[in-house]
Length: 436
Image 1 (tube, rainbow, N blue to C red):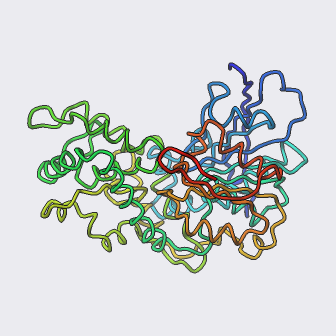
Image 2 (cartoon, rainbow, N blue to C red; image 1 turned 90 degrees about the horizontal axis):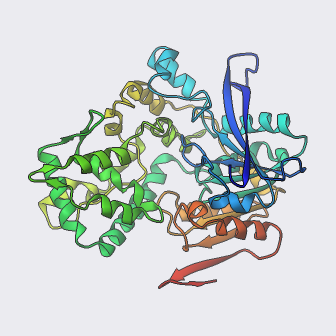
Image 3 (cartoon, one colour; image 1 turned 120 degrees about the horizontal axis):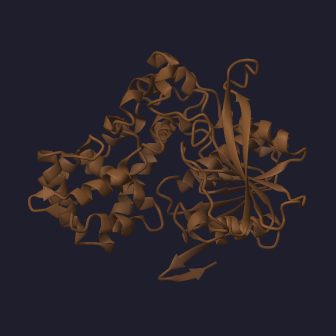
């Protein structure tokens, strides 16, 4: 492709790394190197995508943060187990594992600890040296797992929007999340005040008459509120506003609106996400997650659309939460029963080792986005203080997708911090001006 050479890699790894002689699954990764540098001995940079359940970018050239990375590295874009071209988990494949309990047992092998052990096997096939890792969001959480259990494989680590609370359970995560989502709603309605009445009208209609979506599921008011997931990205408020323009065809919702809403809500391309999202907060001693986002929502009645409509309050959108109603989608309906088993499971291994992190000697630089809707900045700052030697950039210049949206500026700053060219610090944006 223009400016880059791409190479496909396939690896066979144990489903259960503690049983290497047992069943194996396939892992796919795409190598990206700048054109003309294919034969150079460049250091490797492993990219770990956010999610869980998302695939890394499919490059069409030296675009976004890759342009900056390719100045220094040979990049490996990893399809984490269960995603993309790596023995995917879908409604078609998972039921073949047997009864819901067997499906749930299978899914326990698709968390960050297994992803890190995959990465170590792959590293040893590609190079005899430690490599660099760049973790975005959930990929950053995987990077902290890497630092906890296999730091010998790392030359350096870069984390963007993905420093987790080390000993925070799912209930605590969502109790911190709902107020952040509320603030994003407040900002949204401040930017687009005319949308408040439009959303109330839509919500009232959907309570009375849930609308059929193109995939056969129903757009209920709760599903409609889930469109707020996009409010945590750099252009999400604008995208949501444009989605809500002209949704009506007379007294009915228009086909165009329903098709666009369905595209935004569908988990067809990332079915692993609702299965695994809550489990990123399950560790030894946390107990079962037990649909934490849904349970904790009851503590925040301001997100009840019916209550809002009974008064004068705006109808609030929700965010990155997994609800039972999501499993009404045809792409997820066959996965509901294993999800129930998974979310009731109580015995989970730890994903992080605070003592190991306190003794860390791998160079680490991390960006914490202070207005991040998806990852709590307070927990992230606590973890940053725990990891020995971590160089921190705390900023509200960017939303959670700053790595992608900044055209390489976020990655460049973190690389310069790693190399001692600039120090740790903070920056903020005020009325369009940037201050450091």
